[in-house]
Amino acid sequence: MREATLTLSKLCQPDALPGELSGRCSICGIREDGMYSREWLLDKTSANLTAIFDLTEDTVCRCCVAVWREPKKWHRAIYASPRGVIFPVISVESVTDDRPTWSQVFRQIPIDEPRALVLTTDPKKRVWPFARPSTGRSASIYVHDPSRGISANRLIDLPTLRSTLDLIEDLYTLGFSKPAISESLFTAPFKHIQTIGLARVAELQEQLATVRRSPEFIPALLAAQKGTA
Ligand SMILES: [Zn+2]
Image (tube, rainbow, N blue to C red):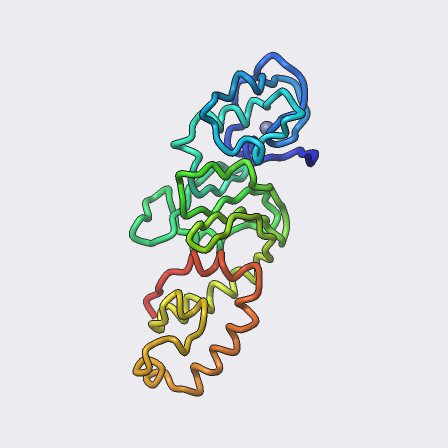
């Protein structure tokens, strides 16, 4: 397992109370004092154990313990940084003062800020242990979307993510559905294609062809919202 210094759980629960053991965290890999016993944390109903735990380690760090014990709070979309934690939402209809959309968040990620991101469409599943913190122009995002068969880390380039999001939101605002943007603009109703113009649609389709293969495409597609244009 990787050696870690900064972890999602440390960003989420920096003030978690320490335990009495020393060792290496069976979840995030960090080595420090103030650990808890792994046996104490787990019960027989805990699922997906071999994927989440390094079973050669008997201890779990205080921060992972704190996140583990509050599944209702942490089994969802997360943007964690030293400034704090927010729980972004996909659609504008769900926005509240402290829960912006991913579309807003993606446009505001500071390049030099350490952060850990989980973009999930399924809050039932515990995916935070898989998220990897990152800093700089490349950001690691754990994307979990069972409807697309995706559950993996993606290393994305932040400026490319923003330009991909701009393109997808323009198309979405123009009236193309997310499936059409994802597969082919020519699957849209012919009347709609005629309104926009066949040549223009072909041009947009070509622009999309390269973008669709990029690691930024799915996070941007999931996040995309219709603008007012
Ligand atoms: Zn840990």
